[in-house]
Image 1 (tube, rainbow, N blue to C red):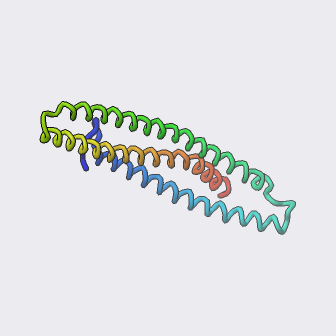
Image 2: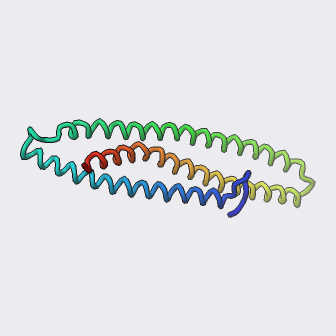
Image 3: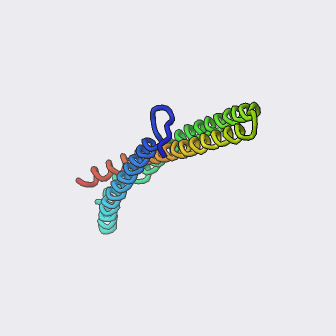
Length: 167
């Protein structure tokens, strides 16, 4: 599919989506790797604390839950913000389709005969499939950008933990 809308082809848009998806996957792998190191270090701290509770790293244990709450709250807020953008885009798609349907209806009412009517219907059907494909790509892009926005505060927290615990 290489239809064009504005300056971007659907192939370009799909390429951009795949790049964002690959970046999100890399970030997910980075988070998983760092989280594994954090868990190992905290298990070590927990085992040490069970043998000598007075010398446990109470500061580290005290910040574990608040930092997770903060990171996941920020991720949730990112999702809420991005959801608003998705709703606006879907509303735009719907209103555009209403306008296109009205335009198609008007054009078809002035067709001079069956052949021109079929030609008009085919033209509008082709244009509809083109828009659906581009809308699908746009919504996929919004979903991936939402994922990236939600992962960012989690990634920051995980990397900060890994750096702090790597001492």
